[in-house]
Image 1 (cartoon, helix red, strand yellow):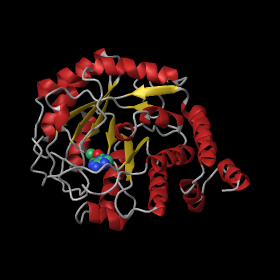
Image 2: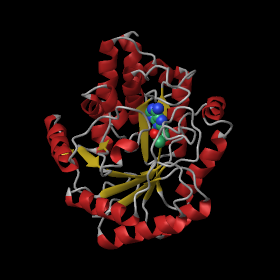
Image 3: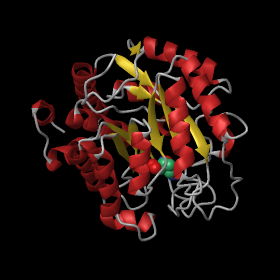
Image 4: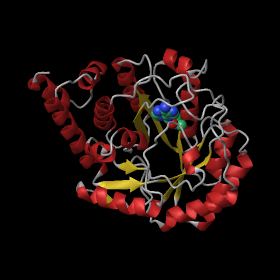
Length: 349
Ligand code: 5AD
């Protein structure tokens, strides 16, 4: 692209869909550099230099869904399933707190047998013991369940829209509808959750226009956080022989999302680090301001196989957190020491 026209796009206050498609379609590494620099400037202006750490506990790998790309899908009989006990989950939350992290992410497959009350009790217990924010990432549940968990003290909910293309959404999710997913995201927001969403890049049949629509949907939903990650083919799924998502397209999408969304939190994802050992640094350079280290204890951690070879972090998460501190400082940034709430709501001390 001619630099004059690229600079004209990058200087606009509001990008059109056509602009977004042009940016996502860039081919020249020199153009990538200009795009990434702009994203980094926007990140600095709207989010500052802090990188927020969120400790994840993957507390159940049971899932009732059939997503064609995901290793946790119900029909993957090759996966040994587990549910952590309430006590194990609360212990893991304490461990995260002792590592200096002030957000606990409780993540699982869509496991309806992990009932509402049990999750409510876990939220209550963690909130009673620890001064932390809690993010839930447990898939689509009943609306009354979201409300009970919000009332118990959960702060945030992460529910990715996965793809903004309604036809592909229904293909990947065996007939489920994108509109319904969006209703859930809107409801979560309406009851006061800080809401995270996001998409997967490089799923079969997806086009650049679909990815542009992902960014526009995230903008329309006014998400507090968005996770943009590459598709990684997973054994024992119908998409096992498909190709990885293109890491450069993921980086461009993160950069454009940063420019369009301005102050939404954006993580440098584990999936990005799985595709390249410097994936996290690259993510931090193109607009990311969050990293989510995995604190799932053994023997469970290696069974949460959304895809294989999930970036192997050091077996001791405390050592991994130290490495993350070094990494964050090495790229000239600071580790956040607050709960790192949404930048769209006033941060409490
Ligand atoms: N590659 C990348 N991300 C995936 N997810 C599921 N399967 C894959 C895959 N093969 C993500 C989805 C889902 C979450 C559980 O993990 O975004 O919401």
